[in-house]
Amino acid sequence: TGVQTCALPISTTAGSCGGNYTVTRTWTATDACGNSATASQVISVQDVTAPTIAALPAPSTISCPATPSFATATATDACTGSPALTFSEVTTAGTCTSNYTVTRTWTATDVCGNSSTASQVINVKDLTAPTIAALPAPSTISCPATPSFATATATDACTGSPALTFSEVTTAGTCANNFTVTRTWTATDVCGNSATASQVISVQDVTAPTIAALPAPDRESTRLNSSHVSESRMPSSA
Image (cartoon, rainbow, N blue to C red; front, side, top):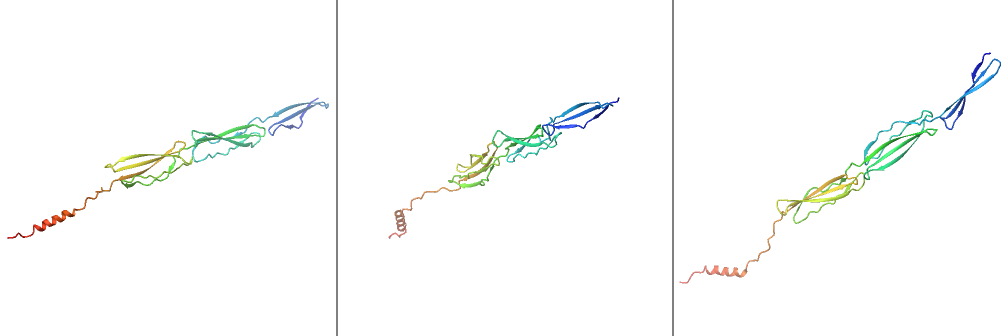
């Protein structure tokens, strides 16, 4: 009256996605007289594990005008192989126009809708001062001419046209009409970075004074003086 048992082929039923399915194993016990009974065991497999995104670079800082360059994320999934990868970016303004932070967030999603995210952050800083175009070299002019300065121009790699202002300092020379004027230009960008450049003009008094014309000689006085000289040369009578 021995009983024999055997297992029927396993039945696999697909679930709602590639990583979800159900396996049913049915056992049949049969005795020597052909009587049999069955019992089944059902195991459901669920994909509830999110994909894994490989490590992205740590937060970094670059200097404007460079622009962020992000790594390309890669991801794996324990159940379904290669998950889908997408990304989004958020730009956060900083303390001035050229300072900002860009965060790129990658999302890896498997076929069952499980997802994970990882982000890379790049900070952009404006640390570069504007550039002022070359000004004329130091020069010297002669009084009474007055200094005439060039108008400075400046550019900025990050924000285009910086603000330009100037100040002047006059330094006395060896006499009242000798002096030096220094005009210093300052170019400032929107992030407060600044550069300066100066033009120097020296004023020298090298011109002698002019004496106004004096009266011409008196002709009558000259004639009388000439007669007096002639008379004094005549011999006296005996």
